[in-house]
Amino acid sequence: LFQLLRYVKQISKANIIHFHDFSVMWFFLFSLYPLARILNKKVYITFHGWEGHVPPLKSIVLKRKICARLCRGNMCIGHFIEKWYRTKADIISYGGVHRRILIDDLEDYVVFIGRIAKDTGIIDYLKAWKSINEIYPNLKFIVCGDGPLKKQVIDLISKENLKNVYLKGFVSNPEKYIKKSRIVFTSGYLGILEAFSYKKSVISIYDNPLKKDYLEMLPNSKDMMWITQNTQEVVEAVKEAITDTTKAEKGYNYSLQNDWKKVKEDYYHLWTL
Image 1 (cartoon, rainbow, N blue to C red):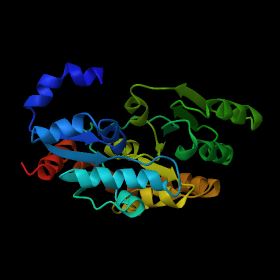
Image 2: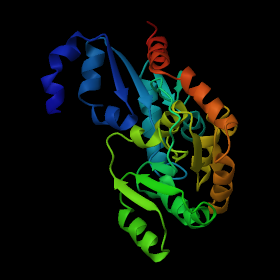
Image 3: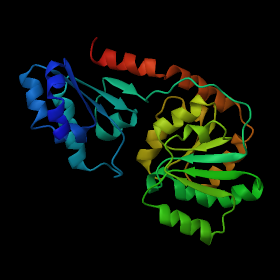
């Protein structure tokens, strides 16, 4: 609210007010939103991600529907939002990435990018790692991220005596680890796109039907990456990904089609500019 007051002059001059996610709009529903309508501003919203509940809580679905109804238009990050939240999207996006300079001097490691939390699959990746490391004893596993399961991760590494695992904690620039890796474990759209942009083999895992749709409803996802549902499938995916170039090439081409210019054009189209 303090930030809102600081920028009230800029907000008063704006033609468009765009909220990022329902929680932000809901917070300002009785302050900024009425002001925007009084001042005849055009109001839009982008719906991001999910809240960790499967199926989504009815109260959250209702709030999202109310926010969508109060806006002139919306963008959904992922097709799964239309299915699971019953939101009719005006634009569907998967985010954007910069074009990358590709390198040949790769190092012998797999990198995990994401939060150390249940929905990112970190525990399953680590459980699969024991078998992976037996097959590829020189392969390293670098974990970039922090979160509520950090202690559980440390305990699992110790209990299972996992070799070649390196916990980096929160990393402000994970791209430096992605660009020299052989395989990327990640399950978020931005992480997937970042890995694609460096022409990496991507392996994702799901543990519920919403996350399955989150991954599989990304256009042509099965042609570009490995989508797994258990540790054994992760092991098999790594064995394929070590020598694969086809999926990585298709993922790279997809990233070229989803740069920041396209994101800008999507927003301009949504705003009818």
